[in-house]
Length: 107
Image 1 (cartoon, rainbow, N blue to C red):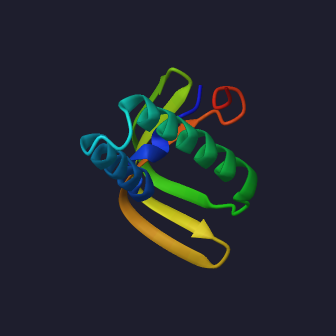
Image 2: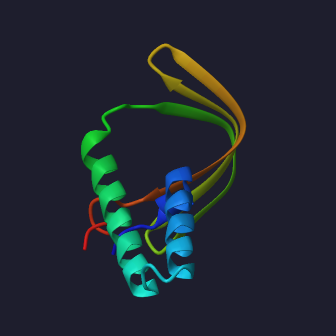
């Protein structure tokens, strides 16, 4: 199983819009579009797991809600500070979705 979280990014949404248009103009079939999206899911998960080395820490003023379902943690936080070395960013509300990148994300 490969996580499909990154389909809701700008890149993922743009890919889906392009594929929908190609299906509409009968340039590709829905089956081919699904294969392309599945390959996108694999590529983005593998790339982020192997190439991103940046470490980030955060501190939340309040944990509003949390949930663990199907090996996926979801946290709703408020008054959050993110820190990377010297840079500090403060955000009112954040939703964090965390998946096990080692056991569940590979086919």
